Amino acid sequence: MIKITLKNSYEIFSCPLPTKDLALNTNNRNDAIEADHIHYGHLNLNDEEYWKHLADHWKTDVSVAKKSLCGNCAAFDISPQMKECMPGSVQKDGVLGYCWMHKFKCHSARTCYTWAAGGPIEENDVSTEWAEKNEEQLSEEKDDRCTRIAKSRYEEWPSAYASGAVVRCRDGKIWKDIKEEEIIEMIKEELETFLDEKKKKKQQKGKRRAAKVVRRKKRKKKAGTESGKESSLRDWFGRKGAPGKSGGWVDCNTCRKDKKTGRKKCKPCGRQKGEKRAKYPSCRPTPGACGESGRGKTWGKKSAKGKK
Image (cartoon, rainbow, N blue to C red):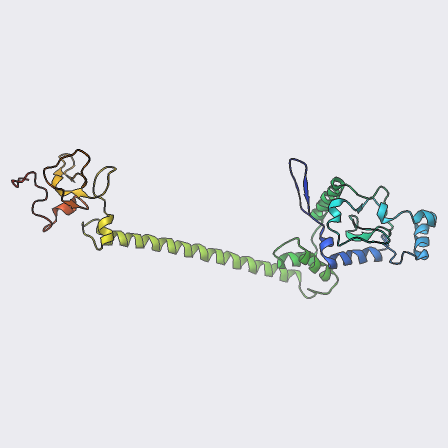
């Protein structure tokens, strides 16, 4: 049973499982018919013997017993939100509602030993209160063998399919030979498989990450960032040699040795607006590339006279 309460007091109501699962509803109804303390009935509304027996049980008259029906029982829910859960309306003898006491769809013209005055439930707020009480009761109930098996075999719990399986298990129709020890072992195996798969995925992820780092280092080494040589045009154009935010290539004709650091520093290849230079720029990706042999006889010259 799921209910979400919003700030504006509107509530989203979820239909009880027996209203959606025919097998579960039928099982609960049959239990109510056969149970000595409930004695739900009778299927034939004209069976006078049933009403006489009921009157004797309550120590009253038959006429009074016939007025104590599901239709006016405190646990009989025919609220608007519950009507949406019903398969349809009963045209002749009454209406279908939900019995919160015994958890099945029942007929308003029938009754049982546990009838209580004060019904029916016609307001959504009251219906929701019964739903909350029912949810708390279910959460407090201990799981039996069939419930534990169902929880271990069905991914979604609770669900109509899982509840139906529990009913069939309790009737002895399925899971007869499954023992408690087998359930525990089965859960352990599933848990170990899950942990192994998780560990493998983590190891594979680590290997992929390590391989990615190795490939990055190989590309960096291949690009020649240490030797100043390029293996491809992509490496060539990808090298940034100019200082500061300008980036890009450098003008080899402007390279000078920094007295403090001893490193070669060059101006960017592109001239700024209004800037004048003695020679037309001779561009290379890095200052180191300006000193390579065979790249230009006049690179690094201060003037046309050839003084360095």
